[in-house]
Length: 419
Image (tube, rainbow, N blue to C red):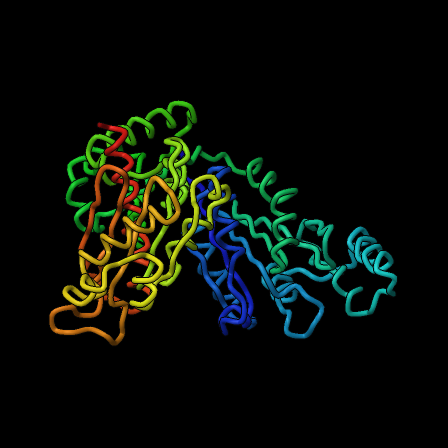
């Protein structure tokens, strides 16, 4: 079955100036995938007739569906409707149902329809109007040479309602599309290049209709398997079989399947094992506590934190020995070990974790340069420490440290289960 290709064109100087973020395209891409349509390109252009025409000419050479957002308002800089009227060699005509919708919206607001808003009900005769029940700008559906062009408002809630109620069902009816199914495997603790080396043989053996994408992010890599086919049940089975193979190739690096964050996966492990945790933070300054408590329901396992940024706080609140700090310094294995063990005692938890390091950009030495971080995990049976060297900027060093601690907790809990 031939793939159905879509292209998205967002129109508006406000996007190019960075005054607003284009969230529409991401949402549209997700929803189009659900009906078997592949988005191959997203283009953002200015409020310029010339640019709109150029974008349309280019898009129709490579896509079956061209979806446009923006430029349908009542002001002079909103050019899309007039450009499309000329582009499809048609004329504007009053569309009475659209005028009725606009009138009702203004009546509901206790206001009279202005002439500018009345003009929004004039639509190209060659289009099929797309009703906008949440705003004053109707959408437009054009068909030409087997291609479908749809213009919608840039206001996200208006566009989403149009897409959900009208555009997506009509596209599904107009085109015969294959099924597109994604499966996501979340990995942590391994660089993208090393991961690719480990998966090389498996990746080369993938069937032609299953593609792999590496999606690196802070401290980990999302592996996305995308399958295309006519039989959804069979396709899902094939994808799951490949996911099962991955579980044998990189078992220690997979922390979840699907759109799950590391802190969510760790929280689930803590709940499943009925364990509690507390944090002692120096260089991360509360970031680790923030990550843990960003998960709904974290009060079931998280007890609290001591942000021991100054050595006096380490001594007073965490009972780190003064001689430990004098002999080894705050950024040391000995110090972070005591921090983890004593925060566990202080809060009466099953687990204590700690961080201490030089986040930068200053504070480093020849022996301990910026990015030198010690982390620790302590439970009733053992204390595990790790020395990290990130050499990133300050915020990245903090964020990478948080990920490393969460992964250390995950590894420790998983090992405990396996034992």
